[in-house]
Length: 316
Ligand SMILES: [Zn+2]
Image (cartoon, rainbow, N blue to C red; front, side, top):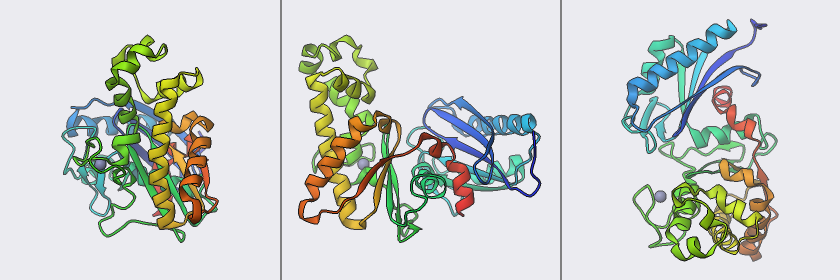
């Protein structure tokens, strides 16, 4: 492996609800090694730290590259100044945990921490579709909904570093209960988990739709909504239309607030491509009417998300 002595190397970790991904890359995003391990809900701090140590050391040994910095991206609320995880909705036992302090002890390197959706937005700015834009909003449509906002060329952090929690904008007062405990957040209406629940709770649909009745109800995910639409299933089409209505309402509100050049859509649901993006663009345009501006709706490149820990390091 060729090691450039003038280049900074980053050891990155992306800790999510289903896996820990490790990456060893130079600061320009040239990946030298990557590795992943599945997580379990109740793995706790010690297992997470042990996995980080093992994944990191194996990538260092494999490449012979010793990095200068560690960058951690985490799916939950974080205080990046203090290096502390505030809350961890997907992995239990990690709330109020200073992960930076403990990971520093493992590798004896400068270590930074960032929220995953904020990091993904930063990655769009550093490596992705937002590279040449001063004003854009990144939205991750996945099991949950998150995002990050760039305005006037700067990342909007807010007073507590918690800006961009797009998923918890309330779109339907008294709507379904959200993971945050309130009702009617966009995440509880149009997130992947919400879509799957909507399908599973609709007994008429499960009985009468030829497509949905062929899938074991416990196995239904948002992916099936798109599959159903492709197969011409009327019920899947109805759920997609409802999802798009809520998403376009939320996005129109953001457009009115920030006047972005583009909305960049990432996360698992973005893989549906134009099946989602074309009607979404149309619905946003209709919803904005007199406030109309031609805001681009762009799909994120999946490789950009992978580089998020490196982007955060380059951005700081
Ligand atoms: Zn919420």
